[in-house]
Image (cartoon, rainbow, N blue to C red):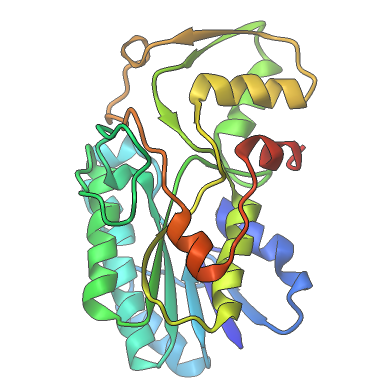
Length: 279
């Protein structure tokens, strides 16, 4: 089975590359944006025509949440038109598509974990374009899995964990937002879940949630990052209002994972255990 992974230089793409050698029955094609520009439909069509692809995992995305407010066209090109072109190519070439989406499709007003069927209402350009990308996949491809995830971190790329470790090396004290609640996701755990879907031969297509288990604020997450890394630093909780950003964030974006656990028999670690294994 041949798996195309787009966005291969991002943290999820690199996490899939990290575990790929363990999957000797799968053949991977890792394509960065330089190798395959998903915003270029002709390039995508040519790529699919010249490579026999069974599964495409689209990890490519415009993820700069605040910059997206000023770069709407670029965010739309990568988050909406890219998935659309991949969906069309997958349909035309009898390939299945896994597309990565986000908790930012929700507005954060819920008081219990979001299920896949809950009403979406993105607060900013990033969430809006990711939601439109989901719809583009649904409209143009029947064999798809859309995976919504949250607070992704890893040893690769840019993410909250690496930012905290860098800041801790530069400062004696940090102030971290404590009233945004979600679930951190270890990118390697997400990568393993995606490959479980690939290998399952399960055709229960649709939208699925995946993150590590448990809930945390960014403050909780930061405190645990420092604890497991043996870093002694003063961390102070602050409200969202004390750290204004161009894009609004959902105050609550915990995801209900019962559907993916049931349909794919996936066991999910707690976010604390997953973080421990990243150090």
